[in-house]
Length: 300
Image (tube, rainbow, N blue to C red):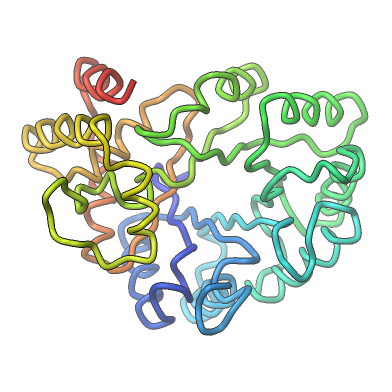
């Protein structure tokens, strides 16, 4: 498994199909094989819900490289087929398989917890998909520690699908994962595959206290969440370490995340091959223990 997962949330949203192909090509040519998407990605773009999966599917068909890839997608947040009932999961997986143009999804996440559906029903549906060859593994995203623990115990007890991975919101500035979810992952051997590894772009260094306005659909939310003394203290620490290694702030941010216990591979998206190069640097960067501690202390 490549140590950096390429996020497909931008495909069909902030970049079109041609640019998406360029990013996917650059990632694959660098040795990348782990691509993350969801059935709802693209909903804010011109082609709507499912655009990201369709673009990835057309790229796979054009390149003929399916056997070299690990494809992850998600179910449960579509406005058309919401929730994690057995009916929703069965209908949703067929749509994702068709859009991706593949026979089996390698990792299929419950995109968010569904408190209105019994965990037994959800896990039973995932188990049926594994038995039928439509998915290889099931994972969870946006679950509380309590609900994740419950789901894992039910899966083990009843011989249903057992989640093998968790996709949480986790980065240098969002560290709630460490309080309880990390322990659940450690106890049960789940791989942590964090999303928003770059804090919606803040941890790339493109946002600065007195810098130019960033033209991004996420800019307003980034400023509201991270434009504070803690955020700028983390950027200062990142700047120093990036300079010492001759690399980018984004690479250092992702390298810190990859060094955390239970993390298998952070997810990060890129809107150009040039931007992707900065992210790929993280896979070759090994931070010293004192550098990891410096960043952890700055973000505490």
